[in-house]
Image (tube, rainbow, N blue to C red; front, top):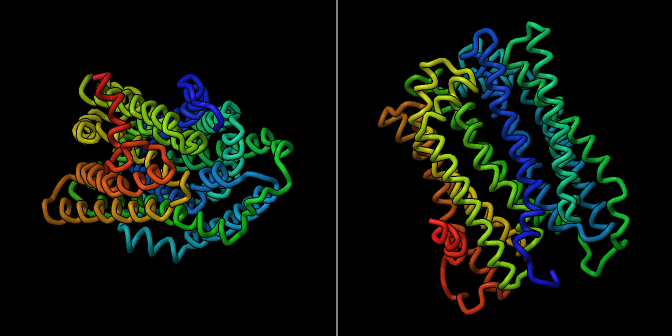
Length: 455
């Protein structure tokens, strides 16, 4: 960027993306509330949560295409090459989804590996079949969303999400009111309908977007460079989202397993509302970082403010009657399950701070095109999660949901600690740190500086 940033500009670019993620965050609680009000809510909530976990792991390789599109598309040639790469990857993950749905493969995963009860497994397969178009539609719309973010058209991204939420909500309410479809299938159908409509709307809003770009710039993007850049990011998503079925596997063998499986989607949906500010900020930081010290400080200070506000909001919810209102009255959980969910929520309430920090660290590394440390950090995070799950469930006999949130929190902290040094090196190499470039962990201090001033 040729001139220093203003906080107003950062806010203007971030706000529509924050609204986008908040609207998506509403999907989980809304669908959980619908499912909880249909027949056999405990089994259907569990099946819906497991089906969503499977769909997320299949979707994982395409998720980071948003960051790639934001960072790599600089001319029409790079646009065409990354589009071809995206479409090829979409085709592959759809084939993978079909393989997972094939009865022998699905039964081996659901019954033999995860040890789901048979009623939960059958509902899970039905919901997963309805989610078949989900991964490719996600990849399609995230590619074009990256182009919109790069051109600072974030309001169009938000409009696409309005279409998604409207489509999802309408489908869920129609099935709830006029059908006898089980709740897990209502959730799968509603999610699929919403994201397909959003992908179509996003593509239409991106028509003519490449008109202002040159045909080819001096920095030619090759398919080899795309693979070298994107493979660590894709591997990161695969490993990270693979955590969900792994957590399901461990929780399925824990104490009060069915209650834990029923509560986890509702708990994660609530915390996602507060963690979404981190996800919404990552692409903004990628687009705005330019190596200058002044701009970096403003981007870091804005991130610190987000971390403070999001963490305070979740703490306030967890330690006041708002938690009961959310679980029992909004999400429709029974009194027993609502009480069951409050303690793990309180354990998990500081996760927004570490989510914002991770998003900021990743943005720095993607800006510097140093994506391999992101993968290493994710490996460390997942390894920590699995180790903590094994100890807490198999040795200490924790409740499944409590073991899950403790493991996820400690794993995230491991990833944050590892990324301090590589993120520092990228910033130091660009001169963004000025005289502070010898200080390890500068991004953490920059992130927390504004937090301390508020406190």
